[in-house]
Image (cartoon, rainbow, N blue to C red):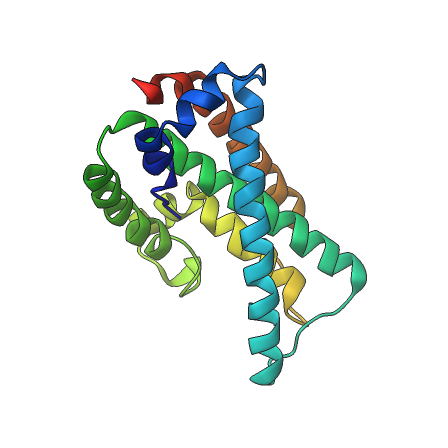
Length: 181
């Protein structure tokens, strides 16, 4: 989820070159999100191959595959933008990595990635429903695995991911110029 390339860019002066380009800040933020999406899509190919090797019943409906690709791109962009916001707030690579580690595990464990929401304590269910990773996992399970149904509905899953991504892109666009300071 969290990458330290933003600090390398700042330390090497690449970020200053980005800032003097005529590209709007939103294009720079979206470029980071697209870069992350490409990495996420390449990783999804590995996941599909491993699932096939393990004999997991994968749904190869072409529409589902396209939807999976779109959701992976959206989720990757969401968490990349979240990472960029954290990088804009903290000024050292060490703090960034520490905060990233502190956030990664709770986000993962407070989602439905390991166990269903229905067996979680009530307080954790509330947190899980506010966690965008929960909606990403719900949608991907529904589309990737044969016979799965969505807990929240694919429409809600996609809407939550799109809205949170849009909000994070707007925040990161406002914060990105401050990262050079």
